[in-house]
Image (cartoon, rainbow, N blue to C red; front, side, top):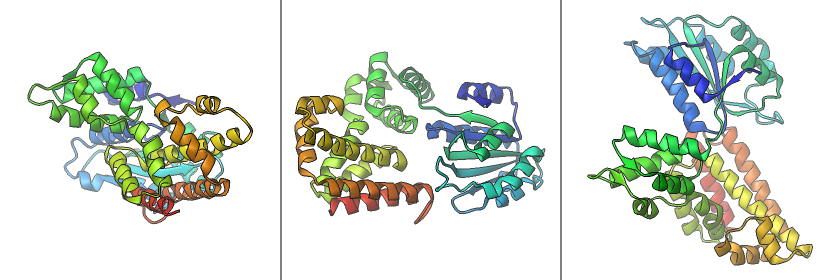
Length: 347
């Protein structure tokens, strides 16, 4: 499989070399979405009727064949048009797919002879590269995988963003910021923008400013939210949830953190039931020192049946978000996770 990196794509874009079909996928969704926007912006830069030459279809509510039909249309008073197909899901099990084997013939027909006046961009939320239809997409398009950034790359991104905002921070401060925020570029960007405003008029972001304004979102989402849920403190749980989401966390990513924490509870309970010493359990589960006592006490106290039900309910929310049950997009995903938090806090 010929899958390009972000750097490969950037090099092509700089040369104004555009392919007829792109497939953008991977865990780093902010840079993935930014790449799709950049491609569209460059292609349609001279289009006086952009609103007629840029179309977006979400597979959560539109059949792929409708989008392919749109891609066949001629642009209006422009050399090219852009069609985006978003929310593509080709999962490992196939149960959540919205791009299926039944679409393969129509998809292959277009990919084998793509429209010369259209740039078609597939944006995948979930793509199992082993699936036949995924291999077809990868083979017939310029496929780019957006993997999570390493710390050095995140610091590089932060420096670039700060230059754009005409602000600055030293290396130690940036390392601390990345350590707090984690490898979510969307959240990192939000925090940098907030800090740049707070640093005015000097435009120098200090270590102390980061310490006071940038919350440790990973720590909050991993423990404080779960603590509030288990304490049946719905008000506090919703306050924490709102803060995390407003800071830029994606609902699916946050759901994964919640699931991970309840799995830790389940595993901790099993380890202690099998006679593993408390300190060893804390080491295996990688629990922060300040949280160990309360976390393990909760693990001892909570019923296995309750934990099992919670994990099943989280799995249902995962399916609901990925299949846009109750509404697609960010608003629909946020609603699903808010409903989950309310339900878990009422147990």
